[in-house]
Length: 310
Image (cartoon, rainbow, N blue to C red; front, side, top):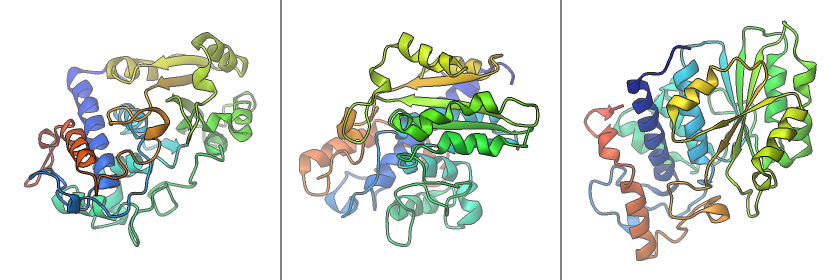
């Protein structure tokens, strides 16, 4: 990988912002997708189902990996927290991957409308990652098998580079923590390279996560004990992130620490699923949602006439 330029840094930041907006829009909106008029109760879906809290971290990792490896046909990405599906769906839509299997998912206003209306809806997109999604082989998350799947994919494929994002709650499962031992078993030249990413956002479904409560030194020592070199990432510094992906470490283990629900009105466990659960009936929550959506400045990222602007 070459040194990252200013244009790439700006693109990564805009991409994260756009995908964050798309996550919120998928979760809440059935109309008024570009906020071209004041938000109304009827713009909100009657049934709100999905997960917001982990989406920002997924978007950060996806955007940086896409910039670094997007042209490499031998690169694969495995998402552990499959419940953060709005983020995966947004990125697949943005890159045109979704349109390859669903002709309605175009990168224009009609496609944006389809993406948002169909999320977590009968005969539409599910609330979690599922096999109907391009490239998805598992739902992931609470069962903790994402890292094991990554190492399984690497078997006999030396040409492969496989990044796998693991949630901090996911790492508490016996399957995930034991899968860290696979690094010591699959180091031969016949196998591909696995890049684990741990997303520390502090909370599981409704409780603090264990690994987010460990000190940086304690977590570094734990990771080192499995044979990895831990590399901490800054979510708001794409240049540093890109440099970290270019490391000479033979067994890097990346750690991204963000605030759960970053960018939204709720934090911590309250942001895990749907913040502002009463946005369709409570005028105050509706107003907060409108300000939340406006904070992403969607008019700078997407146009009804031109579609995606970045």
